[in-house]
Amino acid sequence: MTPKLTDRPALTRHRTRARTEALFLHADVAHETQERLSEVNRTFTSPVVVTPFPEFWPGFATVPDADLLDLTDGAHDLVIHALCLHWADDPVGQVVQCRRALAPDGLFMAVCFGGETLRELRAALTAAEAEVTGGLSPRILPMADIRDLGALLSRAGLALPVADADRRTVRYRDALHLMHDLRGMGETSALDARPRRFTRSGVLLGAAARYQADHADAEGRIPATFDLVWLTGWAPHPGQPQPLRPGSATHRLADALRPKD
Image 1: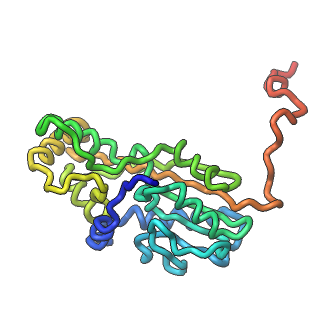
Image 2: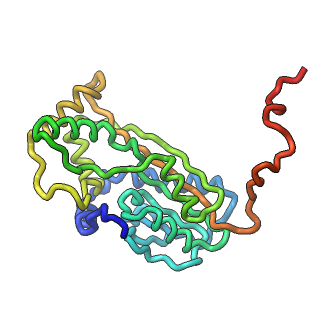
Image 3: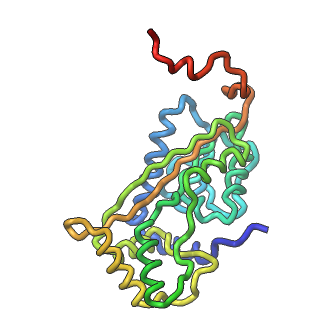
């Protein structure tokens, strides 16, 4: 049985409090996706987007992210999983469902938060809570690195897998301003194992002070890292390029790299 990571009712409540101006990453992802698709020599006629915020995807069919996605097998030539895979209890299962929804030679594209996301806030909260309470509580969602996320594509049976990262730094007045923005993104903790009580003010203020001391720039603003990992893969089709069999090469790499006289 898949361990339960996310408290789905809590996540839904948090998303209902989201503010449009705080959802700039979703807006950026929608724009970047269009840019990436413009480089693909293909016209997609039946795309669908998995997203909690369909307003950023005008002209696309959308379905909400859930444990069981509302997708029909083989019905789409493009499936986009947009900035919500990090909340999935079973990320492999999510990609498998998207793979099944693709027609042969259909494209899967996903973007999700990677392991370096909010690294500064994680460190500040961990140090402050340990100092104030003498212990640690699960507060920020664990996130996978690009290697583990890239492996999801092959595990789901997608061909020609590619993973790349786009690290963005957003600057805030202070850590409390960042936390306020995370609430506006609908990204405050919905961990099933999170503490069911308000965080002590000493922890929050201590984390804010540490964050400021360790990371503030000359103008007193602090950086927040958002690690966006992009994944692409194709539903298998006989006409796709195939990798050569191991040992089938006719020339040695060392010979190719040897300087010519």
